[in-house]
Every structure is written in structure tokens, then in C-alpha cells.
Length: 383
Image 1 (tube, rainbow, N blue to C red):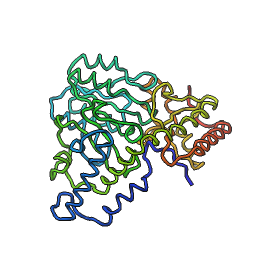
Image 2: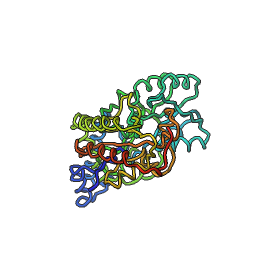
Image 3: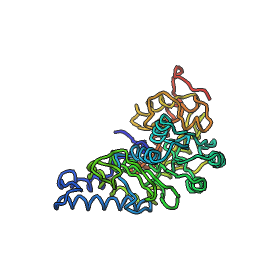
Image 4: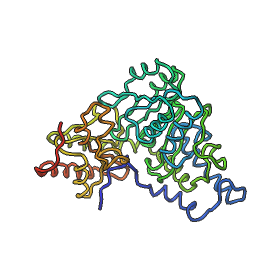
């Protein structure tokens, strides 16, 4: 039986979420846009889920636009804003997920001037540098994440929002990794747009949301029948959205436990990792997600460590799931100033609801065995 410790990549579907989805998968078949009784029932379920997702982040239901996932929501935020204004300057964080960096690259090819906000050695955005970049002028949109998917580092989004709005620009916050793990408040953070994803909070894959200030002028990516306030055409994934709503409601009601439980496990494993010869904890000096630990062991490649743990039935990752197996060093760690060889040695453990203290001990024991018995011909990474 496998031990799953890669919840930042995707979290297992919670049984209570599946229970909420079942009627809309097998029983009720109405289209939310239909006016007959099954259609009205579907519409009511859709709007109830919208209210639950909004409540998780302190927003209003009318501010929630459902999408096919976090990546689509990020694309809608960046491309949707930039399509409605003349080419200008877009600032994106240097450690953002590819769901933000990808559309930023696409906009650069369309004539947008894209610049990357630097981070310090712990992975926190350099606010002084951002202030300087904004002062040059021409910035229309800034995109930063609330929590990094690799290191778990939390960003001071409220402080960033004050700088961005002071310069007359809009702010998008990718809160995919943060929502459901720590408190996230759309209004308090000061973002104009915010991205969420269901499967990071034990909901179904393939459904996300963009939370938006209604004053933002957004151009849709998908045109069609006018669903989602005309911002995302196509019949809604009702079962997925209902699951998203249930996952959001559970996360909101259980947030304190969901934050504290993985923190205990993370801290226990981190203490054991520190005992390993040549171990390095990344971003240990910054505030992080309670479930996330990223580290490296001198002389060992991260992908090799992943495979060695996998042989022992332990599932972890070497960074973002979107880049696993690429052989490339983590762009997050290189942005933090680490040499590529060090960045390639990174291993990420991300705990979830079903993990136990025994799981942390199992990983620590396996790491000890791997480090003490590693073969001489393993490709080393230089530190």
C-alpha cells in the first residue's frame, strides 16, 4: 500500500465530497440553464455551490466564475484583463506556477512587456524591487501567488496590493495552494482577481474558480451560451462544481484542524531531516504553508530520491508536478539564488488530511536508509 505525501500536486477526493456529487452524476440530469424542474434543481445546486466557494474566501457569490480548473482561471485572469486594454506592462512573480508564467509568455508574444518580480533567498517577493518596477510606470496588471506550491512560502499579498493599487494597476492573486489550508480573505488581501482550484482542497479535478471584483473589465476566453455571467461559455460541470462547493464548505468549517494537523507532521519530519548529513531545508526562515516541506540532501539528485522513495511505497515529488521528470532545476529555487545543481536536488513532501505521525516517521526512516546505503555510482549534485 502506497503512502501518499504529494498533496500539493493533488489531494485525494474526500468521501463526503463524493457523496455530495453522486446525485448529480447518476440521478438528476437537468441542465442548469433549463427551465423545467430538473433544470431548476440543477441551477439551485449550482448556485448553492457558488455561495459555498465564495464563503470560503469571504467573497460574494456573484464574484465567483467557475472554470475548468486553476490553470484556466489563471489564464482567464491574465488574458481576460489584458485583452481589454492596450498593450502595456505585466509584472508576474519569478516563482509563479506555470499556469501564470505560461499565459504571461503568451502575452509577451502579443506585444505585452512582461517583467518578473524577484524574490529574496527565502522565496519572499522583494517589495522594494516591486515598488521600483511600479514607479517606472505603464504597469496594468500584477500577478503573484499567496503560497508557493514548492516551498510553501506565503507572500504578503496585502502589502503587494497596496503598492500595486497605488500605482493604478490591478492585482491578480493565485491562491490555489493556499485556499483550504490557511485562511484566505479576498477583500482583506486586496486582490482584484483570485484563482482557486477544487482538487487542492480534496475536491474533484477539473473544476476551479476565478473570484473577481465586479468592477474589473474581463474579456472571456471561451465564448458560447453566456454561462457564468458571459465569462465562460459552455454547460457547467455540475457534479464537479457541487463537489467544489462541498469541499469549500468542509475546508471552511474545519480550517483550524486542517492547518494544525499537517503542521505537526511537517515539523516532526523537518526535525528528522535536519539530522541527515548534508541536509538543507529550503525557505525555513519564511512563513510557510503548514503542510509543506522542501529540502535537499547534499550529493543526491531529487528525482533519484523520488524514485528511491517510490520503491518503498512512498509518493513525494521533486517540485511542481507540472515539471516532474523534466530534468530541469526548480525555477523557484534558482530564482531564490540557489545554483542549478542545488535546485535539482530538491525534494518536496506535502502532507494531507489522512496522514498520521507514523507516516512522518516512515519517511524519516526511509530517508535514513537511503542516505546511509546510497551507491557510489549515483549521479551526484554539487553543493
